[in-house]
Length: 102
Image (tube, rainbow, N blue to C red; front, side, top):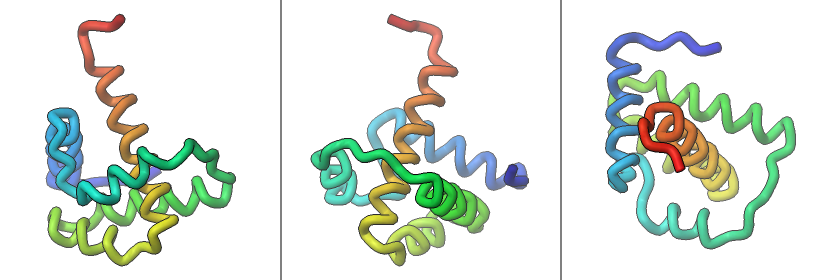
């Protein structure tokens, strides 16, 4: 479990709100397209742990610019897994917070 400050939580909420509106602040359009154009892959337990660590590290950085810089230094395969996981978190967040469910 990760502990985040109020500022960090505010940043995460901002990122999720922006993403829910289609404005993916952390990721370039090219990587988002690439991730969703590729076939679905399942992550191994080791990969899932690694991705979790990257997301936790990214969240603890003090601003969006540093978060983007951190993500940009990841290898492409790792970044793709992080992006897929981020969108999974977004989807779950939208589902949990939505009042209309079909």
